[in-house]
Each structure stands twice: as C-alpha cells, then as structure tokens.
Length: 116
Image 1: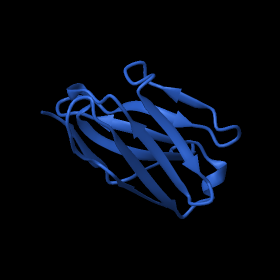
Image 2: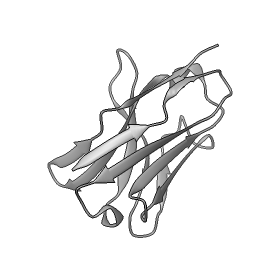
Image 3: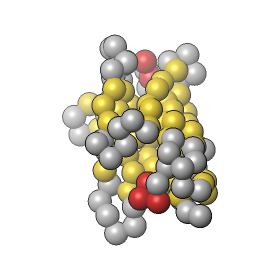
C-alpha cells in the first residue's frame, strides 16, 4: 500500500490550495479515504473523510464550508480542496486509508503553511 500526497505549500490567508493523494497497492474504489492534519505541538486530527459506497463525506467542524474532499476512482486519487485558508490551518496534511481493523495506512504528509 502506498499513499503519496502532493499540493502543499505556502499560501496567504484567504487563499486556496488543492491537495492530492495518489494511492496504489489496494482496491482504491472499495475503501473510505481520509485526510488528517497535525500542527506543531498538537495531536493529529481528522479533517475530512469520504466513503466508497456512496461518496458521502464528513468534515471537522473547523473546516466545514471551506474544505471539500473528493475522489476519482479512475485515477486512484483523493483530493482536498481548501478555500478561505486561515493561519490555524497550518499543519502537515496526511492522506489515510483504513483497510481493516488495525491496518491504517498513511502517506508521508505534505506541509501547508498559511501566512502573510
């Protein structure tokens, strides 16, 4: 299983970024995918998730209305569109797949920095 994130960077407050996560090594279309983030000195937190069956989504309260998670099963890729970014969104963002109990896989992470 391999998850490779891309798309992070430095952006000004109010700006946008789109993160991508390319997956391989498992049947992508049959699993839920998630984005997490971890800011310095804080625990890793769930940002958004998307189910495989119906594409339904869930978001942390702190990002609702600003972030959108989506998936392209043909490309084995999950995305996180981030709009109206705030300094408190600064973190390393991780893509994750939970294939079964006790088998959660992570990407290497991509840094997002929101600063003027």
